[in-house]
Image (tube, rainbow, N blue to C red; front, side, top):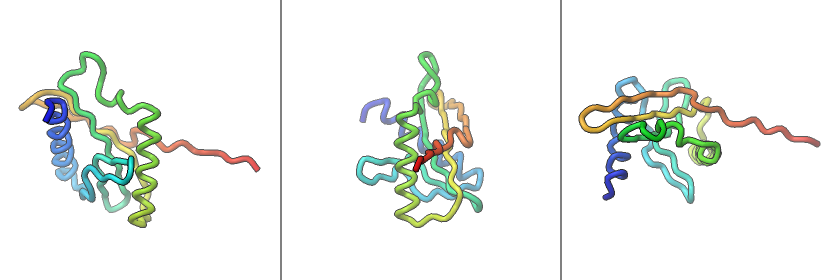
Length: 125
């Protein structure tokens, strides 16, 4: 496995541990359907949380969360919509980013709650 893939997998493991230590229940990791993927699907008593995990060894070029651009956001929203429909979820949804920077054994974890909101589409008659 390429080193960046190993770092990403380790970052997701750290993110799961982080969330579980804060009383989130992990429903799925790396959930996939067709071309859609969600890194972590978790929930609290009040809401379902779709978590995108971005891990980098340093911030020399950019912070990890900057990789979540509009195209990625649209893809995550579509994946979350499909997930909610498949599992018939009736909870408010939230989109978070967990940004992880560092190298073993020192990682900085930044949990960005409500990192983005689905765009509101307006329809004209």
